[in-house]
Amino acid sequence: MYIIKVKGKAKIPDYIQLRDEAFVLIAYFRADRPLKDLHRYGLEGKETELAAVISGLEFGKLQPLSL
Image (cartoon, rainbow, N blue to C red; front, side, top):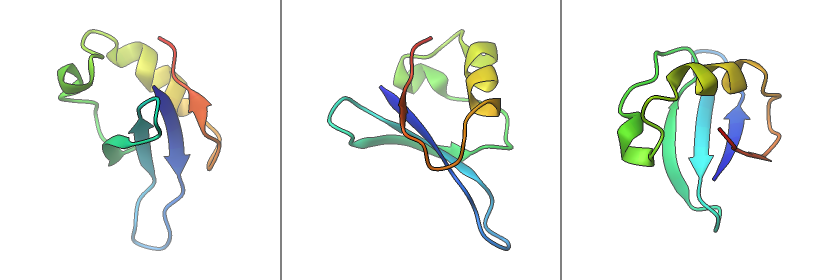
């Protein structure tokens, strides 16, 4: 699984994208909102680790997500 942080413009907020091994988009959510429904992506119970990864992400850099 891969993660990327997308910079918003003007009234559009920053977003986080989760992509699978074939780079297909599997999740798209706001970076400033609490994480929810992570069980859909196999990330249940890893909210704090994912929040730490998101806070350290650079905009526009695709990187592997390993929690």
